[in-house]
Image 1: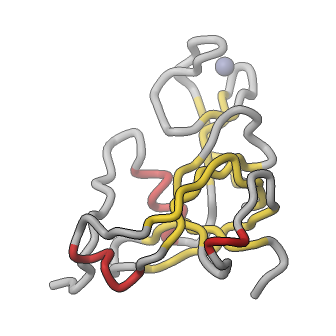
Image 2: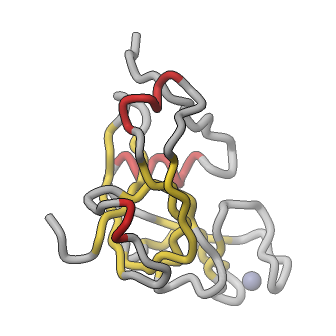
Length: 140
Ligand code: ZN
């Protein structure tokens, strides 16, 4: 039994490869085999050319903050110890106009800026699930 007290993703046919990659500490998205378009979130059909053929390609993990929200009041019990924490929407450098929702850590809420450079890291929250999260680029 896990003691992780927050909601977890429930991988589907389309998202399972994404979660298998994060478990290996890799951030991957679908790349259309026909036109090369990178897409996120995972889905069966390319929005550019309607091809159903795709492969999973690894991203650098670097991106910028597109938007964020500082959470000062935890709705779920599992989040109470984290307050205040930062929900962030990251635009990976390879995905223009497509964004990944996540958390930003290693940064004071008052220091977050739209457009700031961030990089992915991986949080093994349970034996089955690893969440991609972000921190300011260059921080360790
Ligand atoms: Zn395509």
